[in-house]
Length: 342
Image 1 (cartoon, helix red, strand yellow):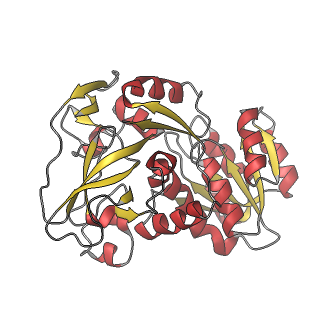
Image 2: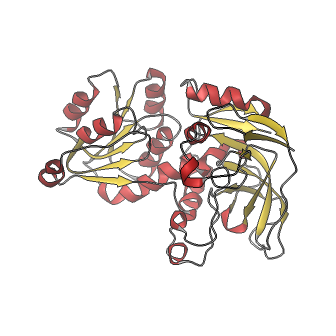
């Protein structure tokens, strides 16, 4: 099969011919990929940022936002059958540890793996090996390319919004910093789940125009005066700020946009957060980290997506255009989410 593989860090991946994946256990599922999302995390992977955390053997296949059709199943699989349309939770988990039993898939301490990040091939290929625990069955008429990026970008944004729902009652304000691939999903999730006032900050006017169309009440151009503009709009700071950027100083700007007793939800990464401890004490402000989401988050998000309440805005590329997609994403040319289609 054709697959996009990293051979060396800080170098472009290549499209290789490799063997199709094989079942390795009774709960394994082989999926024929119908769509694979292209994520900023893939850029971080290629750059070597995850090398010391996941330490995969090179070369390996990237791609952790995947949807498609069940191609083959292990002997113990009962929740899906060959031909089913599925979207895949990015981390197949063991289901037996305390974290899994509490529904915290991403904190699994058992036999979990993360295709496309850990030492396991991902979905920028024609086929992918996952497990039954990762499969969320979709309506058979769903086009996998239309929803693939919801597998990571979608549940990451939804997971944070879901946690913030009790904080965002009528009369509150939520600020979304960054209206790109994750942010535009977060805006829609906020509109679907809360009655909060939604303020969106981005440097790209086209992204802000899209934000207005999908649920933003106010938009602010990130032009150097945006922190003050947000403070003015929110009366001193927002109840919750969702930082989908969290690098190049934005993580500290988001802190300044957070009001007294407010919450800064950090979803992007790459920067360095710094704040005086007195700000925490005197302002009773909170910083919350977020990593992907749970299986239930993905199942709930797909209900919203199939009801038309969350729509993924995508740009499709052929699998052999993977480098174009990665370069376009790095250059900020992708509005919404880039999707590879084998």
